[in-house]
Image (cartoon, rainbow, N blue to C red; front, side, top):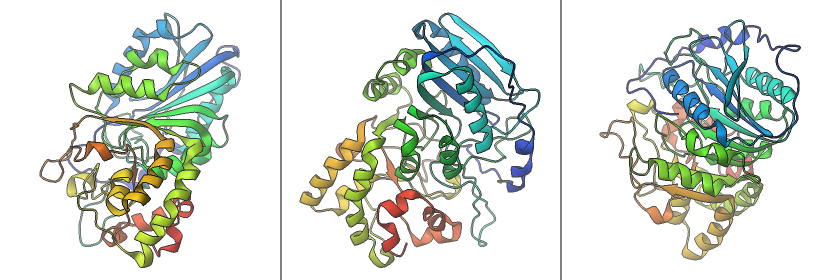
Amino acid sequence: MKHFLLHLIIYISILVAHSCSDDLSIPTTTGPKPTYCEKVVITYIAAENNIYNYAELDLQEMQQSTTSIPANCRMITYVDDLQNPCIYEFTPNKKTKIHTYIKDHCSTDATTLKNVLAYIQELYPAKRYGLILWSHGSNWLPSQQYTPSTTSNTPQTFSFGIDSGKNDGSNSGPSMNIIPLANALSHLPHFEFIYFDACWMMGIETLYELKDHADFIMGSPAETPGYGAPYHKLMSSFFENPIQPEKITDIVYEHYKNSSGILFSAVRNSELENLARATSSHIQQLFVNRSEPSTTGVQAYSAHAVQTSYSPEFFDMNSFMYKHLSPNEYSIWLEFFNKAVITRKATSKWQSDINPYFFTPEIMDMLHFGGISMHIPHSKYNAYGWNDAFRNFAWYHAAGWSTTGW
């Protein structure tokens, strides 16, 4: 959700084999009888890490706002914190624990997510579903990456979530990469929306990978406040028919604009293929023969520095295109961009856990704030494997990167 630790934590990749292999103990005959609903919003909270305490606060906000849930709708919340995972049902004026798993399992395993969501959808068949993914986040970056041999640091990158597997508050454990996440969602009914209550998740690589599994995706291209989404203010909006991403964006922005600050956007997934086509010719021209266009003056949402485990900068897509396209080219491209990124709002500054020596969390050019990031390949990333991993994403092929040599 939320912030990285202020210090580096050595990533222990062998923990992938920990409780992820445990029996999920998904119930097949227990729990409430299936109830047909107009809409079910599922919150998937992977909090077996250092932000577990925020999960309880968000559950309290959900409970406080149950009166906003229509009678024929449900908010179903899966929680894996420092106790055994459980599932809650929120209905008007009521919170009910409908299941507690008999032992711990790995919430950041894609198969776990698929099975949990499938079980909830079996119990609560509905016309429409929404999905909130709550945890740490680091956009599209695959979780098992290593620094060059010239440094002793090991990057802790995690596409979505961290599960320590020890029911403690540590941040050492496996995460869920975006491609396995997309594959898990492909086995489930289509979602009306996906809301990322996690840091840095509004990257075009992530969005394009998930585009076929939801109508809209909402979240932040940067770090988000530790308290995350203001559920007590958003509850009624999650159940509107149709969903109004612009309204949700406004609520999140208004909630944080006078405190920690916030960057937030929403994407209409049906327009992402058109955006890819509109972007492809420019990518091929700007990056031909592994060119490295300047990113000076381009809005960044992170820093390639020790405090971010040397992650990429996550450059703003709109800011980059504005810098490198001619006025006419940019005007044409922007029409496609605005059809895809249907709403975006940002405070001039936002709260960041990155040391100010490395990074200034400030919007340099509000007019060209785009609300989503994009990977800009650079030779300095080769040793981390990020440029190689980038080639596995659907966006890489759809946006013309494969012709550039990158």
